[in-house]
Length: 109
Length: 118
Image 1 (cartoon, rainbow over the protein chains, first blue to last red):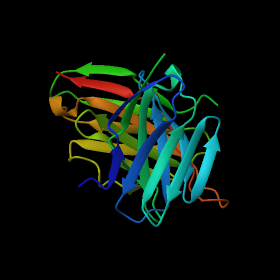
Image 2: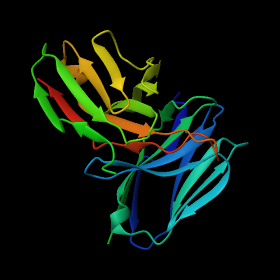
Image 3: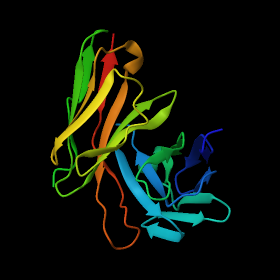
């Protein structure tokens, strides 16, 4: 069993819809990262969090340490949000990241 | 800053050949990471350095792989001899540690090197 599980694997939405991507992990962590990988292949860090909630524009990331679960929300989705979203965790005292398999999001106009 | 720089962007080679991938981290960053991404296994950490010293190389697949960081602004990942199963996209990333907040910070990824071994 992978230490980091994401759901769904694939997600198709219509422009304007509210999107939720989930991430569950089975180990103690020091931080959880959400990354975005565009079709061209480049990877960008969206959020790094260890508790609570963070917001950046239309993106919101939440984490529940007790339940070992995080969600990434996209409000008012747009075709340019189409990408693979990857959850990753780092464990105490280490910079080493363990990655989920990613969620491929397609937003249709 | 130009961001993390990787070269080459694409590499096609034949089985048995030596391959060297290069990375220049963001100036001032003291952590450097090498990752491999394949369809089957997703993103995997190969090795990471702190202040030019290798900290964790447990992800390096086998002795054919080696990585060096001779100074703060340059790192190489070498595969010798290369095999078709090494075909993947190899990413380099860098970050820095700060005493405020979480300590560890987000990682900045390079554009990747797409390696094809025939």
